[in-house]
Length: 379
Ligand SMILES: [Zn+2]
Image (cartoon, rainbow, N blue to C red):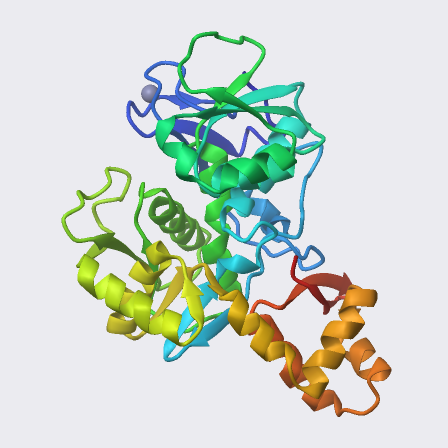
């Protein structure tokens, strides 16, 4: 299933295995079945500041007749203790997969694909199903091990069909899609663009390695910034659990740091006791970033529900939560106007704390060339 692209003169799709080139977006190599990536022939990095989502980097993203977005991207950069983190939890479904889903859903919505079939992949399947809700039918192939995942129930709520992974029937109307596809890479690379746009001063961008796809995508993003003529000195560092083999997707020039399981569990426990809930896999990147110092870790950090209940206590925060439970999407200024008993500075401080604790979420909107932050309760 293919879709020719308006700007196919500006990119090629290349197979990472056999290096064959194609002039259209394909989900996998039609010759060898290998993964594909999009190569920009004349890359130009330009930020479209009116867009408060990943489409602000449209000059280095494929163009589609219908663009799907749920305000993914522009995730906050903050600190956990001394470690600078880019917290991908603040994406619509709480993971960086949403960046990939925005592109894939736009591709599907712009084509005549009405049905697709994907293998269950934690986080990604949920994110993509969320984005495709109302756009296409989704069949999710489930295998025995997937039964341990809590996400299956959430998928049903999104109207997804769960089917056994055995390929008994071959539905020719359905597009078969893997997590590893050129649009996922294009979506994930926007993490680097955001770090660059904010001119974050650091050397290393640390990501956990599972399949190596996130590492590859960020490495590609840095390469494109350099090819755009920009002076960029970031390196991607891939954090791997000791004993695991280096994923083939990780480019040779990328540094890989191995961490023992004991260290990961110790740090995971230490952070949990502080009430900071990282995914265990995110802890891997956190440990390496803590060690490297001049770095930023790309992680998914949330907080335990018990911590949420604690922060709800206290006048100003309670006031904000009550207000946002009735009146959604307010700016800090609007909140302050409605809570006259507090100072504007106090409102900002409370909002920052509530946001870091995962109670309040925000979206950006552009008004008169200014980016306006609007707050709501996290769902
Ligand atoms: Zn190939």
